[in-house]
Length: 146
Image (cartoon, rainbow, N blue to C red; front, side, top):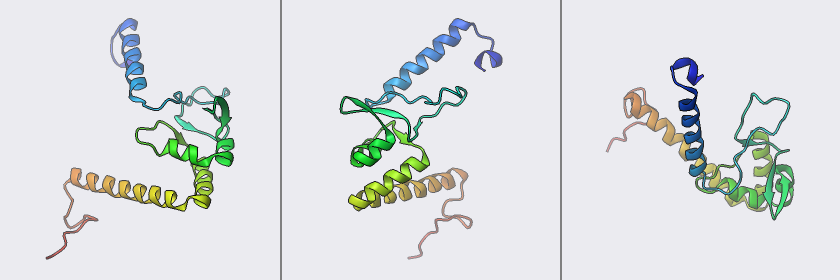
């Protein structure tokens, strides 16, 4: 793709790709390996999200996400919800984890839901501010008369 759009030598292309990989590895603060697609059938799809059948290291053993959800959901929850974590689950795996954590620790789920809603509102507000309609007639955020 890069070689098709620009006329660059192969050495330049590989140097750029290698430097990108180095910086992206340095940006990850968590000690888990970078997730690549676990399905060996389809190599064209790369995903950073873990599926139920994917394996991550836990207690010097490698366990699947499904085992961690059933046996130690709090450990997995804390990995996902730490700042700068690179661990993310697919939608159905996260829903199962949320149910398991909600049974024993409902306050953690409530806190995560509140943070999620706050991030959604911030995203909408920033978008409206970029477009110049924040606080205006078409805005979701109205000025409160005093």
